[in-house]
Length: 248
Image (tube, rainbow, N blue to C red; front, side, top):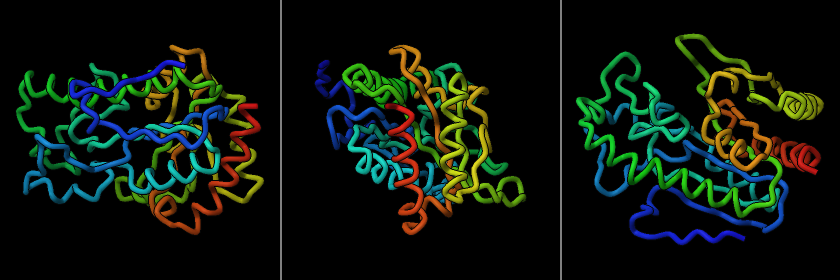
């Protein structure tokens, strides 16, 4: 098994790793797990409006990821920095890698970001997360890589009734099977909603899957439900059972 040794240069503030079992058939990632500002950055006063918002992180995704990893007895990697600093679920050349506006107002943290500051965020946060993800997937025997995200209950003034979305790019058959399992359990689910995996929005896990010839899916759960421990207690066993069958 490949071993990843964390050094100061690797910036361990960028990620957290959890291992609940060695040979599980599923591996979990959570790219937007935290709204934390690591040492060297802080929240500008004008950005405090964003601290507990979806612009800063995926609300409820961390709890859901860890509960699912425990049920599956698998390994997981989670980010430890706000996506407002830099978004690990985007390619390095993406226009939304460092967000300039949120809710129609400038993000003060990202006003006039110099090339040197952009490179610092890449070097200390984005690339260490991707290196760690790469090393964990390389060392894992998991056939299925599963990324966990959440979405807002209201978008551009419209209420979203969707409970869960299953995102896919190449793995349509697997997505259909997972969607059917969720529907059978009475969970409201759609494929490639409210975003599409075919639009590059599962970049992080998909890159690792292609590199190591694994399958990849991404989960989107509505934030109010992801925060509800009762809902998670209902969702996690259904997800875990379906993912075990898919990866078997």
